[in-house]
Length: 601
Image (cartoon, rainbow, N blue to C red; front, side, top):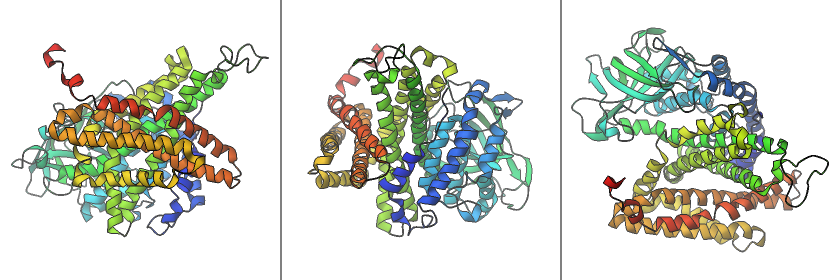
C-alpha cells in the first residue's frame, strides 16, 4: 500500500499563482503570511498528515470505535495524534487571536483540510467539528460565552459537535421535536434525541461542547421556531457563564449508542439523548437556523474538500499500483521488452482513469480554494460591495462544490479501485476503504439531491439572479478577453461552448420552473453537475493561461507547467463535453421522471 504525500507543489501553485494571495496583503491576516511563510506552514501540516495521521488510517478502520457503558473509545493512536494536532495549533489556525487562535485566512485552513482528509478522513472529522463550533460561537455568542468556550475549543482541550438530525426528521428540520424549556436562571432545559452526531462522544478531549437545535414551546411553527443552544457535556463549575472555573458536574446528556457503518469507522457517529440537560441560548430566540447555518455552510465546503481529499489519496494509490503492476503489452509495442510484461500504466484505459482522477483533483483544488478565498473577502475586506459580492459567490457556489466534489470524489475512488482490478476489492490494498469512506460525503451535510434543489430553488432566483452574476460575469469576461489567443484555443473554445450550454440550461430552468416546479426539479441534479463542470473548466482555463505564460517566461520547473497543460487538455476534451448530454437530459423535462405512477414502483 502506497504512502500519502501531500500535493504541496500544486497547492502552492494555486495559492501563489492562480489566486495570487500576495495581492491581498492589505487585508487583516494576509499581511503576516507571505509565500515563504505559507510554504513553511503547509510543509509542517503536510509532515503531520503524512507521518502522524495517515499511518493510523487503516488500523483505525479495522479497529473502529468501541462503545461501552455510555463511553466511546477511539482507535489506538488517535488520542496521541489528536494531541499533536491540537498542540501544533492547527485547530485554531483561523480562529481569533484573542481566544488563542492564529487568525490566519480561511483559505489556508482549507488547504490543510484537504491534506488531513486525504491522510485520514475519519480522524479529520474530530477537529473539523471543533472548528465549526468555534466559528458559530465567534459569530453568534455573547462575550461571556466566547470567554468560556473559545479558548478551550481553540486549544483542543474541548471538542465540539452540531446536533440537527432526529430519528423522524433529517433535512426537514421543521418537524423537530427536541424541546428547550426556559428556566428562571436564564438557562434552558433541553430534552430530546439526536442521531448521526459526529464526534458526539469520544475520549480525545475532557469536555465536548454540543451545539443543539431545539424548539422553545410557544414559538412559531416550522424552522422559524427553532433556536440554537450550547449544551456542554460537563458544565463549567455548574454554570457555563463562569469563564474562570474548571469543569463542574456532568450535564443531563448521554450517548445512547454508536452506529455500525459502511465506512468512516474510526469516527464516532452517535445517538445523543438529552434529558433536561442545561443549555444556553446561542444567538437570538427562534433564529437558530441562521446561527446553525454559520456552521453548516462552512461544513459543506469542508465536506467538499473531503471528497477532493479522498480522490487525491485514491489517485496516489492508483498511480503507484499502475507503475508496479505488470500485465500485457503496450498496444504500440512492448514498452519494456526486457521484462515479461509492461506496467499497466501504458494501457490507454488505465491512463483514462488516472487522468480523470487527476484532472478532477487539480481543477477542484483550484475551485475549492477560490471559494475559500471568497469567504475571507466576505469577512475581511473593508469595502461593503466587495464583501457582498463575495458573499453572493459563496452562497451560489456552496451547493455546487459540495455536491460535485463529493460525487466526483466518490467516482474517483471507484476509478482508483478499478485500476487495481481484483486486488482493489481486497482490504489489504487500502483502496476499498477509500470507496467506503467517501460514500458518506455525498449524504451528510445535505445530500447531493438537496444541494441541487437548493441551487435551483433558492440560489438562482435570489435577488432576481444577483448571485449568478458573480459566477457568469468572470467567465464571460475571460472568454471575451482570451478567445483570440491561439495558444489557449484548446481551453477557451471548449469553455465557451460549455458555458453557452449552461446559460441555455439556466434559462430553461427559470422558464420551466415558473410554470411547473417539477420541470425544474427533475433536471436539478443535471443542472448542478453542468454548473460544476463549467466551474472546473473555468479554473482549468485560468491555470492554462498561467502555465502557458510561465513556460514562455522560461520557468525553471517547466515540466510542472507542461504537465498542467496536458492534464487540462484532457479535462477539456474528455470531461467538459459531458455538459452536452447533461443539457439533453435536463431539457427532456419532468415527463420521463414523473410519468410512472408512484404505485407502479
